[in-house]
Length: 245
Image (cartoon, rainbow, N blue to C red; front, side, top):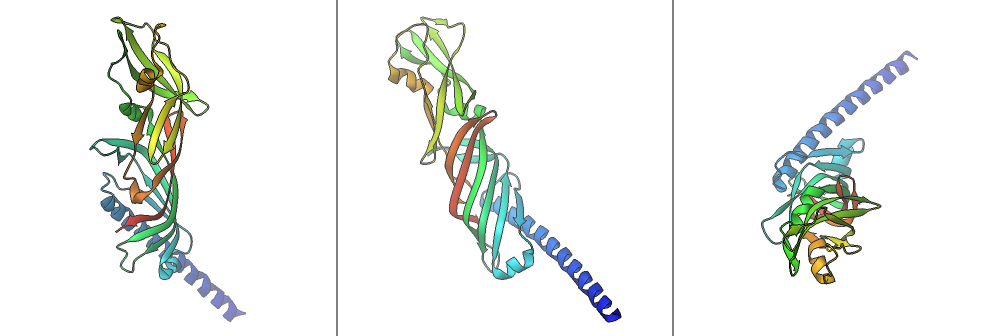
């Protein structure tokens, strides 16, 4: 009985040491992965990296990690073909099946899903915020975007008719979709500007707009989008997503 008791104590101690070593190793690996991702994606701040699953060391021996969660604040994504950027807040990505090279210089996830937010003031930069003529004597421009409820965006438009600004801006509820990496905002109806009849195409030139978003981390792509209280919430997904190298 005494020998068995000693054996049990030794097993518990070794198990505890293994857990400690495993947690130390995973903390070190998370820091290294965060630094590499910062360099690879040219980020201004170090991202949050959390390696899931236990034990970590046996996953390393197998050359594959089950699950890695990545969090990036204020990611500057490319907005089309020009040098313009658009800020994406709180990009959270869950990477599954991460394979890495023997020297840890590269890592690729089999699949990835995630979420992010584009604030309304950031998306507003895409809309026509400068007064534009929509009819003889009538100019209009978008002055605000906000949550319209039920997944809609409220687009607020200011108009001037014959040199006189309308006393109150007009607004219209709009649907938001994503197609081929482009966020598109389209009015469900058409606002009226002081009772003046204006061709639909001219009105939509103001109310409807779109924003291409390129260069998300690791090659992930926009998947779905919906309006929310603080901005446009998007979901992202990808396969063979590069984390480093």
